[in-house]
Image (cartoon, rainbow, N blue to C red; front, top):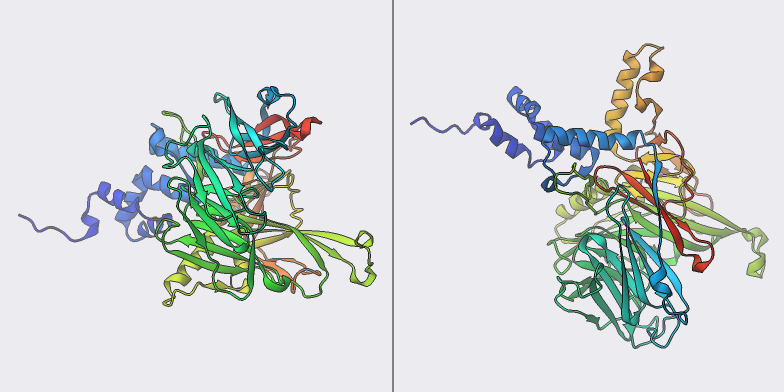
Length: 564
């Protein structure tokens, strides 16, 4: 019997493909450079080529719901990715919103508030009445759920009428989850009282089938009426009376924990927060004495927020000490990660941004300053100036720094990164983001992309480097007459050099950053008054906007859908 070979090169190609498919795209590319045999295995495998391209482009797919082979999937991926490199948004349909179920009782004084998540809009009625939760003037006892379709899916609407009033809600269409809640007893802005939350089905309004209890009673007050975020099994919100802490609630079993910020003499209160994934949460916190902000990233080291928590501090540019800053009235975090996946049996694969790989953070700041040389006693006579900044931060690089520092630290001290150690290479700061004129109050984000009025900003560093090489090759090889027709990439503007945002009276120094990006202009610029949401149903990117009605409490009257 021949002796078994211990050389990996003697393994069957199918076995090698299985092994290589478990690696990252960087490791796969390294392996195919080891020897001619590995290179031949890679070139002959549609699976490996597809996985590499999928990761370079920054997408995940839904392989369980498609019957296509990897050659066909690669073509779908190529077509999908091409839509972001040659974007041509156009209106596909409009849908009127029906609020008739809200109009059955005339004596109610309706006010509306809205939340849009993926392609689901939830409208709640707010009223003033005896059944309203104590100490809170806005409440709702009716809710209308609109599920839209940008590419032909059946649209469905649901109406929920509750037997009591609530003051907070959040929802997750993927989990068919609706969280409603209110504060009970105690005085507002004190720590006395409790928070009541109910996990319901978004479609039926009944108790969610995965919830072990119909009602979660927390013996502490939270700010759910201001903001709460859902990701997976957990809800995040802030505590009343403990501005630096974040409350994490498991909506399935009712357990909860409190995230303590890393011990630092500089951090003060949480301004905003959001999930990066089910095991990563980021907060923006103020520094004491008005010296700026820091980002704190929390990680559930054991895969659950009920276990061991790791954290890291990332300092943002330091504020000037001139005292000219009157107020920072808007500091908003947005993430580009879309956690929804759509797809039907036998349909083309649906793509979405890859979790934690194709993710950027967008920090928008509005600063109001006044001229101290001409200060007046009456605030109405102050000479005020509003300055806006937008910072785009590359999440994979930040998490890489965090994980590396934690692995190299023996005493479990949370790592702390000062601005000049991470900010210049991991971010790009804009003054007003006037480069493409952002749409509305929120900046629409999707994966590596930011959607603006006249085009797209792309922050995919690997794809940018690859396309820059292709553009240079085409320019070198093309004749002078052919250069103008060397492909759509010639219309892209690649920005790889450092840019500087003046510190002015806000920052203690000029802010210089180098995160590469490209500007991709629209083929034709549509008449877009404002975009509220971006979704990606099936294999076609779609962007969604709503049109506000005139009067009638300012509620949206129509939803408009644009496809690329």
